[in-house]
Length: 426
Length: 168
Figure 1 (cartoon, chains in turn yellow, blue):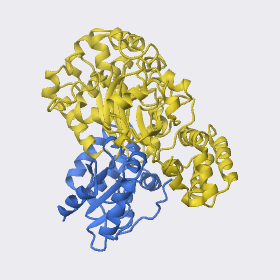
Figure 2 (cartoon, chains in turn purple, brown; figure 1 turned 180 degrees about the horizontal axis):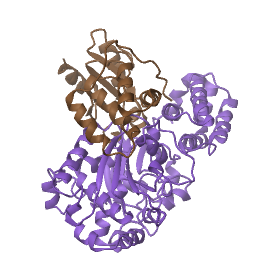
Figure 3 (spheres, chains in turn yellow, cyan; figure 1 turned 180 degrees about the vertical axis):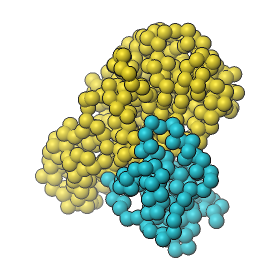
């Protein structure tokens, strides 16, 4: 089931070095790139149907075409390598194993959108990853693939790595911009959208690492080759991270559109130690949970996920076996989102704290049926009432656990803290 | 939300060593505003000293030419900036979703017992400090521990024992 487009060089020894990367095609697309008009590059990417791989799935080429024309201002590209959504661990493979693929992608994007200064925003925890990336950038500068005259084609491009320092919210694109500008990462109201008014008040494109790393293949082989993979509306491949209770957790590159249960069974080796499947988180911790029954008809693409009232998200699939205590899982997630709230909007700052407090109360066996309803009411009062979607990233999954596993919350109310024993028996 | 507010005053002036001085000047040319240097400048302090003091915050505010309050805002908002010294061996254990599912609690409990520390504490001899952190992005090889910035994947108590034995 696996295909190797983005991950083609991942298993090649020393492919992170310029020398080996070049032997396997790195920077070989620059000749074609600079023979094209920028607008033709944008059209090719649009035609490929490549969608943003950060979670929202917005068509990349379309985003680029929102840049205003004829403004006398610089245009910026910021590459989002914050990768902080729990269960997401894909971009770091590109940073460490094939960083020149990312750099080549940045050159392609910057030429297309007329950008000469690009920033890669990388989460602070990625210590070894940032070193690998910086080493590759230094090599690219030394070889003339970055700097005043990229590849000798007369195009100037500087790429700077900007390290975050432990804030999930900076994966939100406008918080990311604030962070580069030297402020705390609190999201901006939109509009204006970053394509119009972004970094330093200038037009800015923000794309995920994996999105940018998909560009060299599309440029070399054309939109039609890319569209051979995946589905009509969700073309291409994705780096899926499979974690939790599976035999073979890990990162796998797969075409979009495969049945989720087949992937768990055939790619990830099935549920760990032959246990029964309880539920699946399909695309990172903020995506609503799926029951095994629902999962039967789910395929790994944006449309199928939406049809099942969940989201494709970041492609981080988490498998939960029969022993998982859903109420405790909700506590774990609520604590994460509460901790990561930037504090700007009251419903999020206070509300996520209340969700956590009530879940803890239920776990102690001190909750009432009213408390379960109160959790639902809180979700209603938080969701979409804030500047950004961090609060919804908590309430959407919490609501799904309350809907689909309400009996587990009720068991704690009826039987007190000992309810966990029942959960384990199914 | 971050609830870090206290800075430690050392009573000693702070300045970058020569290596950080050069790096600061290299980076400042990459941004159209000097304020963009706040996060990189804080990282340079932490690389040099291991943590960030009140004097260090004042130093970079002056060097960047911005309000000390804006530097303080960033130093307290971003939780990876240490506002007090850590142990010589700083151990971070991921507490979130996939690591939780795959047994991070055993790791935490073992370290608590072995080191006599709770997350957030530093040992009396300064050898260890312990922290539970949010998702470290290594969910496929959970549970994961970060020791002095290096990742240790698919951890269990036995691996942890051999790792601790190598530390000074």
